[in-house]
Amino acid sequence: MLRITTLILLAPMVAAAEEPHRNIPLWPAGQEPLAVGKGPLDQPFLTAFLPPKEKRNGSAVIIAPGGSNIMLMYGLEGIEVAERFNEWGTCAFVLTYRLEPKYHDDARILDGNRAMRLLKHQAKDFGIDPNRILFSGYSAGSTMARNVIANSGPGDANAADPIDRLDSTAHTLLMVYGPGRPTAKENLKNFPPTFLLSAAWDRGAANGSAQLFLDINRAGGVAEIHLFQRGRHGFGAATKSPEYGHWMDILKHFLELNQFFGGKK
Image (tube, rainbow, N blue to C red; front, side):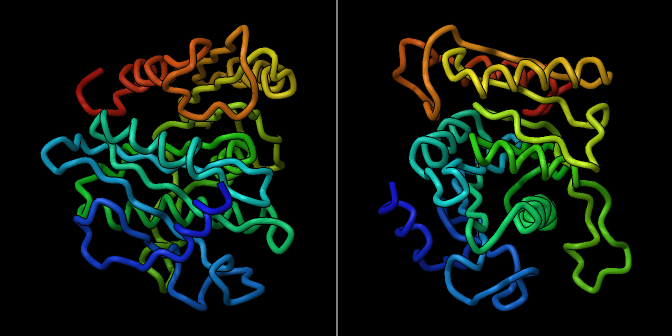
């Protein structure tokens, strides 16, 4: 998995927006906020996975893989998930965010919100509806996702960078085997519709997700939760798993109910 990470980090950028895979820096080189270096690991970016133009329905997803904030699990929790979204006509973008020990939650919150704003800024290039972008996270990426949502909102109308003027609010939130942690700015009632998923044997993630569902529901927010009776932590897309291989089909139904793919309520 480390090898995959290295390959993506060093992949050259492709200029054409219609290339099926390209890296998109979140900020111009040298302008990353809170940067403590100038190497590849100091420069967060999105990697695009695009379905054919004729198949796109205007939806998009940002995928934050897990990896304990020290590495990123690009295979199970990045590429495989992106390819499944592509089958549904969704443009997928795997997020390379900044990691420990050099960076902490404050930098990752900036990375996630910038990724949302950047996609909204480039929505026309990719055929994306800027109001239909899902933010998803896995394990440590799930913690990041919760923090990003809690700190999302209107941009700075006076910012010199037009990207920073845009709202970073997500259409929906997906948190897989990880409930994240509450923050001071968190208002669960204002969270977008949230899909929570874990395996019951992964007790920390499962019980935490169950508690988060209760908290969102009591706050008046919209949430759906699925806890599989068997399984483990880190199953990713799990396309061939007998325990939870159909979880992305359940997710698709949730997204359809929330008009993620378009259409009317």
